[in-house]
Length: 182
Image (tube, rainbow, N blue to C red):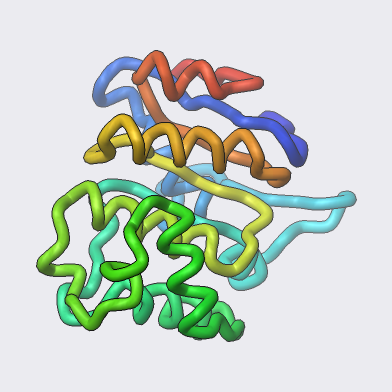
């Protein structure tokens, strides 16, 4: 059991195979526990799974993208899943804020043609698209170059909600306000 508050960056650290990625998936509601329970509450009231999904952003290098969609279409799709609307202009602006140039962010080029680093930037734009309260990041700087990592770290530092990062990377760990070692 632990408590996290808005503005905190909780690092989930541990050896390979210790369960960092599994725990972050459990916290995000991506996996269901085989025993015990994972429960979110606010003000003493339990937050149900469906309500939680509308309030989170999740990024992992293994998160699949649709190869036949453009970057902007990915953001618009995520917004629709959360019953929100994000315009094409807002999508492009968000993508460029993560370092995709305007020509790529607004193009009809499918993400299946993007490099792994460009795809990771799309994943972050998707996670931030609907102004989440909580971010779950599994090895977030995977596939990012130094510029992409700097942009990401700036965004994490500016984020006012809670952030959970599963990592063993020393630079990513330096973002933490609390560390849970598995």
